Length: 133
Length: 145
Ligand SMILES: Nc1ncnc2c1ncn2[C@@H]1O[C@H](COP(=O)(O)OP(=O)(O)O)[C@@H](O)[C@H]1O
Ligand SMILES: [Mg+2]
Image: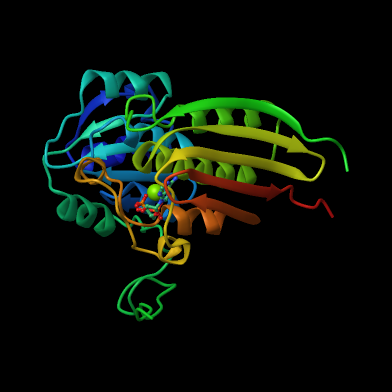
């Protein structure tokens, strides 16, 4: 799904990267407030939904080439963070929806998470969720 | 075996969350300029960033060194600081002694060293309490067959 369609679904405000939204194709979503989890679970063409607004989220995004970041619960990062993202061509959006609801909206719209797993009730490639070991 | 070439040697300041991540960013850009396989760059970037953040969060000061040779890429993260008293415990997923300040920024999940382990082809950690820690991360080029 194009990032512009996601921006509309979440009724999100664009902080930077407006010119990129029409072109960027998002394959999967990661919702997390833990930087190590973001680094370890995301794959290519991932969009991050997060409540973290400090500069390190942009550093992490740069390391793994995220398609963009959506800040949830109306949290706005500082101008320094927006500038860092602009320099790195990472689009930033803000939605008023909390993390759970934002993820739900995008999941309903057909976007998968980064695990590649889904519960047996949905999707074609359904598998039972693995039990914690 | 060709002589390893040191491409970067970057100082890292403990507790400075503004410049934190700059070393990993420079390592990534340097490898991109060399035209190295992008999946390998991704692994190096993640491991280097985690190791750099460990210096920032847990040590006093240190450095990141990037080396390349015919077989692959080596990143060294070396610091002066409190060291790691129990390395097995530190390698356990979820174990963390990170400060509340670091946690508020999204660190302290205790997944840094496990992430580094997952991303590297060879990992060596030398540490001494109240002296410092040296993390040597080796990544081998994919074999073109
Ligand atoms: N360079 C270091 N110097 C001192 N202690 C460290 C260093 N790196 C890691 N540690 C110790 O190992 C623990 C686990 O590290 P890590 O897996 O990266 O998790 P986190 O950084 O989230 O705490 C840290 O909480 C800390 O106690
Ligand atoms: Mg860590």
